[in-house]
Image (tube, rainbow, N blue to C red):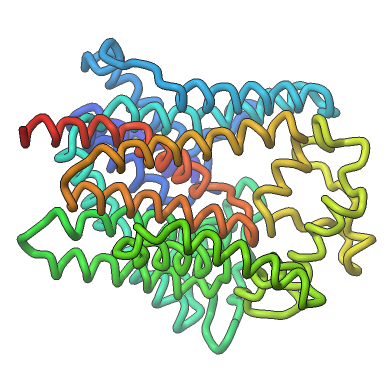
Length: 434
């Protein structure tokens, strides 16, 4: 399969070089959405997926065939993205059993996170390019959702046979029934990651609805297919992300009451702590398909934070990929499932040295969106910002039930890149209007 992987990677890379940068970015997203990332080309101990090869082509294009790199200006969010990477590396050095393995892992993260983020920051310069990207994502999502729904109904994954060539463990080929439906994963490593593709990109793409007049029904259909993709995964994490994002979007009309809503949420959480024998975050876990998994998610937080799970490891964590050993205090599993909480996954792996910069990235991205929202005058622009914010809001809540890996990790950094360029897009709109 290495020959096939290389052929697809080279084809996508040639398209990236020949097309304009924004269409090259769309090709890049299609390359990791439509082709399994568990198939790679191995060079020594390094695995080069299609995603990693195509992002190299994008930067070759940016450096040698455009002037976008010379026009780039750093912002605080850029520096925090880099700082988070460095902090994780520093934490890893103090805990890694193999320094070579650590460097290999971090090098891969450069290709999967840092480069995609800066590609978005450099390429998207105006609203038209932003819309082109969103339209491209919706086109990519439709066939992916259709195949996923077919797998959901039949249990047959048309590309599932490729798992026999996978470089690492993925979901089993045998279909998994849940609530009478099969869980779809299509080209993704896991059912949850497949659903997150739609749950993360869907709210972002919803921002286009108030900015188009022609063929609006087609965009609604596209969003409908994204909803179908979320359903087909039959996974609680993506469903929670989507529900929270939809809730946030619906709050747009009532945004002037945000202080009242925030106070009401706080009062509700405090009230649940007082009158219930469960913590308020237990109820987030209820957005799962089984009471057992909801209980586990809640118990994991208790053990890690309040019962000494991080004792002696608060600063730099236990190490990347290291089991903190909390399973003995939770249930009879032989490992601690950190895949149920993104925050605890980072805290356990890299301690506060990694966790604090991660929070800082999200806070600065949110502040950037808030600041530009306050300055814009057009309702259509505000909707655009609001929908991107909804995606982050949904993901922030979803992180309480799932941690991301594979393609959703790259999507998260693409979203950060979009937050970084949003003020530029809106500022241009203001200048064009006045």
